[in-house]
Image (cartoon, rainbow, N blue to C red; front, side, top):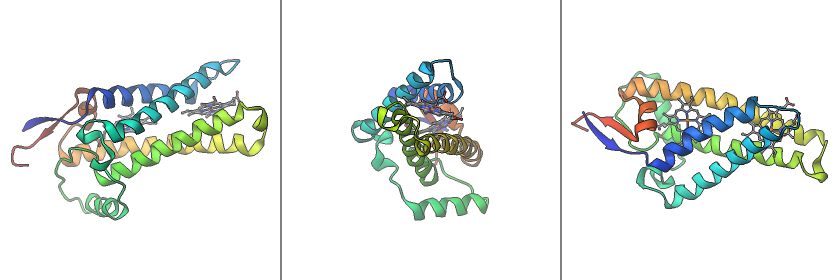
Length: 176
Ligand code: HEM
Ligand code: HEM
């Protein structure tokens, strides 16, 4: 087993700040709603910065290292279901990659609909509130799937992916 540096400092700080801020936004509701809004703005800022990093960041963090590819993702799902052993993917595997694009897009929808709720034009408009609430709950559901995926893939590839998101390094068997 040897260690390969995969996640740079930006990706790791981005990820764990996103976790903290997402759950803060989801569960923090003070009287004025200010804490909720600030956590939400910070989430949007993080997601924006991550998108820029996807073009200019380090190798495994760039979008071209994990392009959205539906057929590769379905193939990957099949491999999971058939109990096939998996090699370590240095960036995100195709199924994980789709989930990441899905999470980033849903977070943008949650934050933009939240911001709309604070604007005069949309204040009190029911459909905007519904979109915000639905998108937030959908994102929470996807986060649960995301964490389940991380657990399953850590077992299958015999690499602790959560630890890799902390240390930045993935353990790769010597023959790979
Ligand atoms: C405690 C719960 C969580 C754990 C244990 C966790 C774990 C991980 C791990 C291990 C990866 C890397 C997967 C890989 O190696 O391919 C990852 C990536 C990612 N996770 Fe999570 N995650 C959690 C919660 C969240 C939440 C709440 C969000 C967003 C709402 C999120 C969004 C993402 C994104 C966007 C990436 C891609 C990282 C990047 O390329 O910059 N995660 N997560
Ligand atoms: C990841 C970010 C966010 C999440 C997870 C989130 C989630 C939620 C949830 C679950 C609710 C409660 C819906 C209900 O049951 O009525 C809510 C309400 C609300 N959100 Fe967000 N939100 C986020 C970002 C934002 C942003 C950026 C803004 C605006 C700047 C915002 C403004 C609001 C407002 C004004 C309400 C209604 C507050 C109230 O009923 O007291 N949210 N949000």
